[in-house]
Image (cartoon, rainbow, N blue to C red; front, side, top):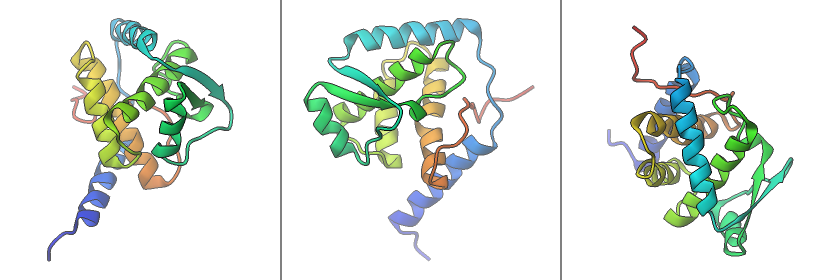
Length: 165
């Protein structure tokens, strides 16, 4: 039996989703969180967009989001950035804006392949491996869980290949 591309992608989504859903929350040092927040703020200052908060606005597809970005604006949905890793919700808001702009810069959609492209683009700019791991959890694993479940999973950061010893 030959696996089709759709079957392979479905299998990848399920595997990554389960890493997220079944993974224990990672322990992240205060130093790493401070470094993450500093990096996010630096990235935010480089965004050529007006980020706008919304309780209800959510883009149905990447093209709809790209149309707003071309007008230098971007709506950020309140349910997109509720991760407990941030000491202040503004950092989650900023993270979501940066991530969405990375989708635009990489011309990637909200599929697993698109999320991986956006992750790779962000990971190249990340100042440390620990921040790359946080981004992987936030972007790839959490997105896979969303695709797998059909709704947002409870927010957490997981480092699935980290030993708990």
